[in-house]
Length: 348
Ligand SMILES: Cc1ncc(COP(=O)(O)O)c(C=O)c1O
Figure 1 (cartoon, helix red, strand yellow):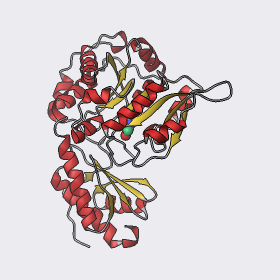
Figure 2 (tube, rainbow, N blue to C red):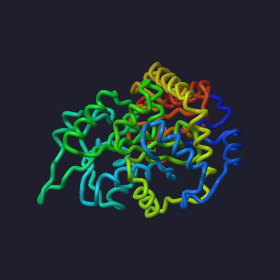
Figure 3 (cartoon, helix red, strand yellow):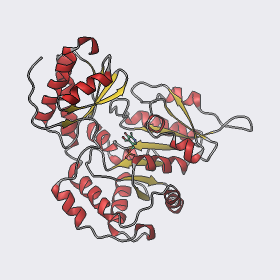
Figure 4 (cartoon, rainbow, N blue to C red):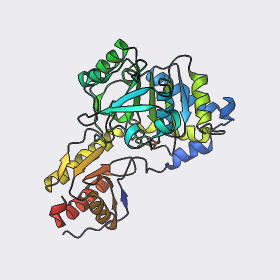
């Protein structure tokens, strides 16, 4: 095994681990604020209007997390006892602790997919109109980029087919766009074109863009009051939260263009691991998935050597690049992961 000297821990568990930069903190400290529950925080309002305009929606609402943004977006379209259809590995199914079922009585029905990207024909076969005996489908949910799909980007034509399908059945569409910024950078598809896919959409400011917290839910016409009431019910209405919105605004203005560096770094890690003999799925954005025999143990050994990566299942590792890791950090991390895998080839 190569002798590896790590100058500082390298954290590639998620793109949520970034810390606000000095200028971001300065922007946050200087933010003009007010009570957002009274709609009086000008910094929050500016962010909401900016993001709504970027995606072509009439309004947007700032919420603490992506989970809450997904919940409110879907709840606006699906009532308790009705169903939303999504892929079997969707974030709303895998990582939101059953919130749609627990808080809103919404049934999620899933179908398998490749890399999390739904096939419109398979989706069409799942839709149920609903009657006295049969639960009715009310909305379709898509995730772009797809987290468990390894940062996979939906082809825009597929998304348009899914939207057309929804229209033909009079269904809603919610787009989980936690990493829509990465999809936009990787594909060159304008944000407004992605915006046109959903009736509602969530976007995260605290992932690739590097804000410390905050997401927005993009809202359909005339649903802003209802959305704000739902946020209140979920305990997500905040007060002088312009401090966080200022970090998000800074992130949007300064960190969107650089996302391609994260994508290059992910490709770099994948290439190094593949060259070392690992079974790596080709990244499209900032997420690298590696198939191994014993993911928890590989992650533990990497951690002991100063590199943090996520076991993403018993046999799957996830490595995520972000603005707090350099190309050099990624090379070092790839060396460490490779050395652990090569040391225990039965794990790799
Ligand atoms: C695709 C996707 N949607 C939603 C979320 C939820 O974001 P948060 O953790 O801010 O609630 C995540 C978080 O990783 C995600 O990957």
